[in-house]
Image 1 (cartoon, rainbow, N blue to C red):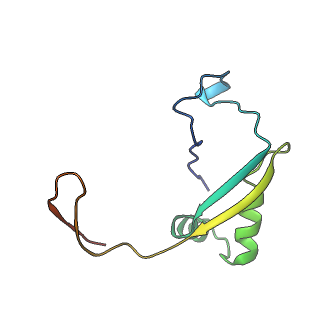
Image 2 (image 1 turned 180 degrees about the vertical axis):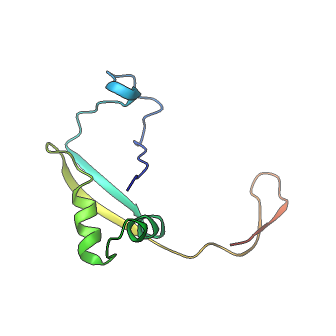
Length: 97
């Protein structure tokens, strides 16, 4: 199962790089954000049972040995369907699932 990871603030971090262009950060406490819908689809495709125990194991495996998980934030919701006024242009945009 492949999961994409984005480091918060990586666009401004200018530190040593590891192989493949990944940044090596000396983090101690981290927060894990889980997009439930995305992880659920990937887990089921990989043949895993998607239940609270899986989510806990998954979130614990997001930390490397020297990191402590400060909190895990899980979110999941249906796509927004409707119209909204765009904040800059003021135009109306229709969102569909």
